[in-house]
Length: 459
Image (tube, rainbow, N blue to C red; front, side, top):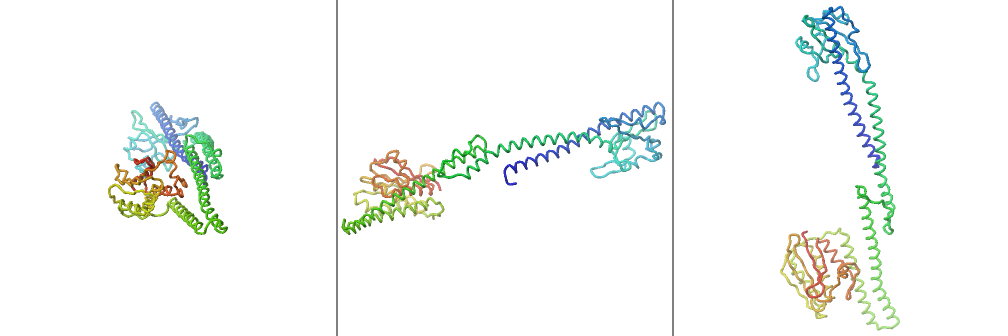
């Protein structure tokens, strides 16, 4: 009972059974009311007929057959009592009842559970109803004889009405069963139609391979809820394939970038062995390439840790201007070799951030700017101008800048400019910015080169 088809069919069956039960109960109640009302009407007719007969010729002219009546083609019998003013039976269609008081023979309903003997006043004022006569439920009516001190009490057992239920219930149950079967067949067709695309989707997901196109195997999406689910799987499949292709491209780029310094190291090792280059020159190049290899591996590890999204970063209160100045001091020797000036502008801002990660991002942005600038690099700090923006940092240089296509790709892994090294620094910056709930943008700088802007949103 775990499949959707079984659950829907079970729910439909339970709902139908409950509906059938309620319908049967209400139908029985309705039929009972109809039959009782018809029986009351017939008893009234019989009582008036008896009154007319007795008015013309006395009690002796009453015949039991006169009290029979027909409902729905079924002949039903009724009996009678002739009552005196003190409710004593003076004549009856049932032998042995003469001389008894009727209130001692009857029980009427009082409240929901209790049944009591009716009073003389109740019998006079109550012209019809349901009572218990000698242990049997009866439907009764009574009429006064005009000009005489007598009343006639006509009654019929309710059990005789039960015979009328059988054909009516048979017809009703056949109709209900037929309706149930029709609804069940329609439900099966609807469930089958609902489940069919889900089964196809299940098979397509089970056979899914991210390195192969799958769009042809997924069912076509429509405007229904299941169609929306299928559309979501289409979108998910496209994202998985894109991520898979990105991973393949990343591995290819890693292999290429690692192979370049390794081949250079290997080449100079052979060159030193063959005495093609001097030992000092070869070792110097090997040292540079080894350091490049170490830097690349470290940045790859940083990037993989950032993309894992499972590391907790401790938050501390720092002076943003002091942090930027520390980064400038670290890169001052590198900038001095090319006569590049570095400076920090803007007010001092005290912010609560993961200090280590923010400093790494500032340092990477500053290194990138120093490699591509002509004469100067400026870090500008300012507070946010909207409720969503807390503070903003711009890193400007006066280099050649970036085209629109280059600015769109500059944060990609292994994207290197003319003076780039590993092509991972800006990718790391973008990941850090994302983890800090910030935004990193590349635009045109007022100095003429590139501007990298970090916008810190509310954490």
